[in-house]
Image 1 (tube, helix red, strand yellow):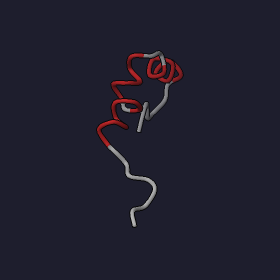
Image 2: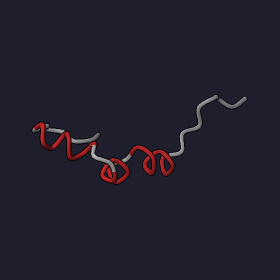
Image 3: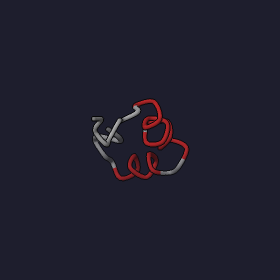
Image 4: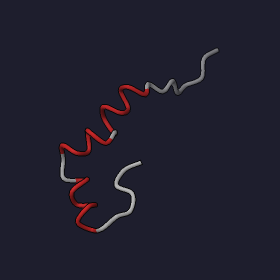
Length: 40
């Protein structure tokens, strides 16, 4: 029997990765705030 969650790293990075967040203002806002870590 398979477990429920079968993670797909490529799809996840496309949706939630650094480049995906760069297209919106999320990264810039965090940069302005002076964050040490912009995205994990």
